[in-house]
Image 1 (cartoon, rainbow, N blue to C red):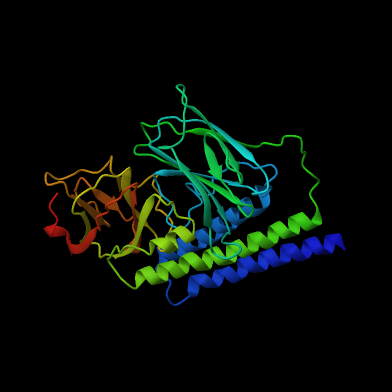
Image 2 (cartoon, rainbow, N blue to C red):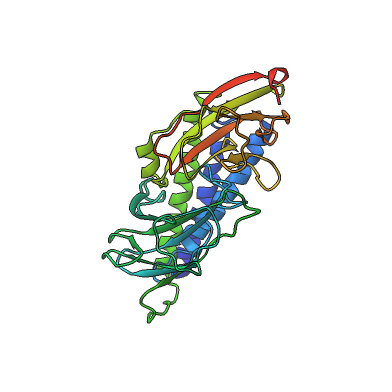
Length: 361
């Protein structure tokens, strides 16, 4: 009976992957070769993400910090300036984070309840960032995660908390050193139990739900974004926070559709006081383009600022020769994400499309 149950679970998982392929042929999905090829790869990447999130690293009694998004797993307009780290937690336990600060510009720590596998929500239950935590002279820090308030660095949970997300944000990856962080459950007397039928089937059920929901969710977001071409509007910030956004970040999601001889200019009329800002070019599937090989993002540190304090960013299929040019990685259409980080007085970016011959370097 147990073997049959396991086989049935695997069959259901495979069926879930098969059904997801229908996303590629929906009316609102671009049918050009590059978007379709990346869509097929995206489906495979989300399958890896689902298995890592809910099968490999899904034991809150023995949490592991791992990277849920990186160079080859991308989702939800992942930030090229970030190292993302995630751990499954349980608000009934207490945990200790220990780390070495490094020189990276910004780190945030957030606990949340809910997930894309359950209700499409990730409601924050606690938040800290590197501007407020106590760090010793050698750069070491310790943070306690618990439902009961603690002295020192305390990251709150409640009894339903189930996820820890750490964002480490670079200004310049070539110059900064990331933080080295570990997580441990405070009660170290427990030992792992043998893997049971109930545990593994429950994990696969969550992986399947995550896969179905996530693939559909971000495709739906892109459908909505695509309805306003060549724009970069402010998104509903309450919605962004409800799906797991950093409370220190103001999010904009937009779209580009360009001929090979056109340039989209994104202008920041001014740059208010902030931790940083960044703009990135994404594909239809809301994956950041491959920042290992293409210049597809820019931030406060890397941008060239005009004498009047404004910033013009050129997005084009071909290199415009502008200091702030961003590549579309061969795409003629895709999505965009802009963020103000730690900004109390944000300025909305503006957009316009011009012929490449009218773009001055």
